[in-house]
Image 1 (cartoon, helix red, strand yellow):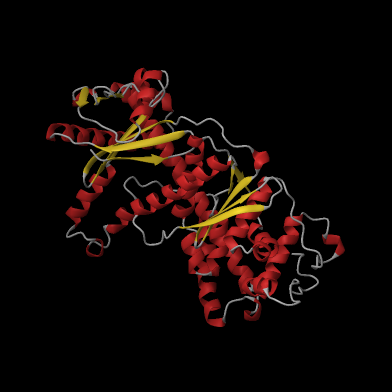
Image 2 (cartoon, rainbow, N blue to C red):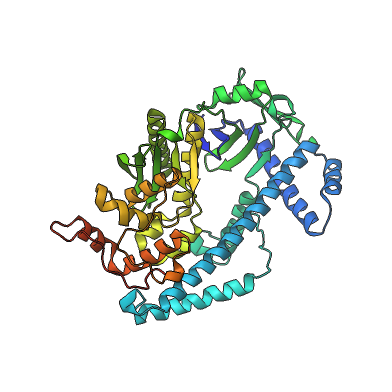
Length: 483
């Protein structure tokens, strides 16, 4: 059996293994997945008609399901609805932010960072499409397509999507809609799950099937290469274990999710901090002492673009392990930015391909998930911070002074923020009008950063690092800071 481990969220861990099945067992799992998908869509139709969950539950139990099997279907449906709504809301927010970003640059002349006339024409067309989407999306409930929208649309372009005929597409469509089923666990049930129970000693998995499929299916030789000890502890202590069966090209895979076992706390905020920042060239980490001064730094290359998903996850896991080991060795917590990347994707998408590649959902989401999960298991405290203006602060205050790269300077700014150090603007820089000085310092840094972009960050750092007497700050317009 092929096994591996995936992280889900702090406090949860998932182990997977590929099942070696006989033809009869494989057929039963196929039939169960088909039944599960049909019941899932049936429950969705009931919910659309306004049928209460308790009434629907009685109907499904009368149809041969147990109460726990129905709960698994309901949990799966809740997850699908929540995920679709979250994705749709995120798409609307992202498009709205992109509209604001495009409008802001369209208002600028090319000499001050605006688009050239040719690019501006295309951006206006993009702006019109985005605004039309936002207009239609107002008050609209996102549709749910069981089997994926991409595959559904493929039937209209069969040859382009690799289908010889519509019958081939229908076969793929049915397989996609019945490729998995889920069995939810509970701490109040024996072995952590009533519908599916794993025996670590005998290496067997007992699955409770619907009555029409025979009731019980026992799968022998189920081995997890990783996580056997944790699963055995969960089974003995009655900790909930949820199982998900997924059919892929190589056969059926089993995913077991249970509660992770946290390590004892081994870090102390008073000793310093380990700031981590993700940039287009990789992950930068800077260690500080108790006074907020950098004592060590390192940049971990993360060439994730055009990498297979498995290799990308392996690279991210290796970096997360190194960061965790660094934190354990020094006894310092890890400071991370809140990985809500929609805002950055909307605003930095206009700044080049490197940022677009870096700001992919996989890179940000998977890296933050891996870091937090690794630190949780190693007993390392993680501190999530608002990363507002940390790039500008790092470039202006720390890059030239300590010889740091832009990403390392941002990581230092994050670490100092986690230590509650306040970052005032450098002396001698224009703060704008006196009536604007009562605003939060981040607002001043925002205006400073906008002026800095017009000057050019590389030119600014070069001037600060240059020899001779020119080590001051560039001259900014008197009203650069206020919005």
